[in-house]
Image 1: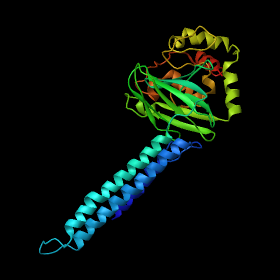
Image 2: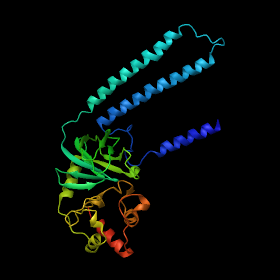
Image 3: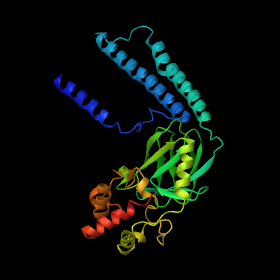
Image 4: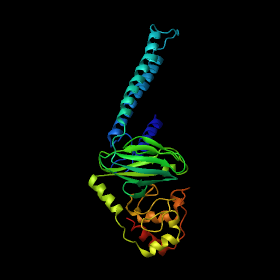
Length: 322
């Protein structure tokens, strides 16, 4: 009995530990859009129905054990009970679930969208483009509250799956094929997304942040991303090229145009680093530059061999990229 209690307490602590941080933790049962609420409602109904079936079945098993007949004869009317309990009840439940599922599917029809965002899955990060605004970023999507946004999803390497459980369902991202999806948030907040299809060694650390802003806040964000950027620290910029950073990363307004790694044009304004693995702080950025494999093993970013003074200058430059 004591071991059962301890196991139950441990399970509760583990489930509590699955809760994230921020104003909206990652859960399909904590919806922040009309579509997510429809799916959450369906999920809760399935939990209730299947839970009732499970506990009802267990109750019948206990009842049969307690009231079993010593002569082994079946009680009268058992055939009728088996027919009703084994065929009619499951049929009614399954047909009811089908009807509700079709109603939820009808509510998932894509509405007229305001603009589109291209999202490309890579080992193990996300490229994000706003073709209508000329903005390129990575591992973070900003959208206006209440406005449906069409996502054009594809993969550069293997099959990924885009999932922001607070806002919508999942959609696969396939190499050389575009799938269309859409998002809409009811309220401002930061909603964590993830890759929901196993895609290799760092699948678990392939996160993405969806930031829902007010319409005015979103317009201001777009204007800030499309304005002419002031040149950053000259010494750090020189190191950005001489240490090989430009071989993989692009920075708008410079000769760094590679798309092998995330675009760094506005990296200093992002919430997190390494596909939502670390908070975007100077110390974490330093760790990521010097030894990325200690943070995200198998990631394609190599360590940067650089002296302490040069490293500080490079950090100064990267933190001007806003």
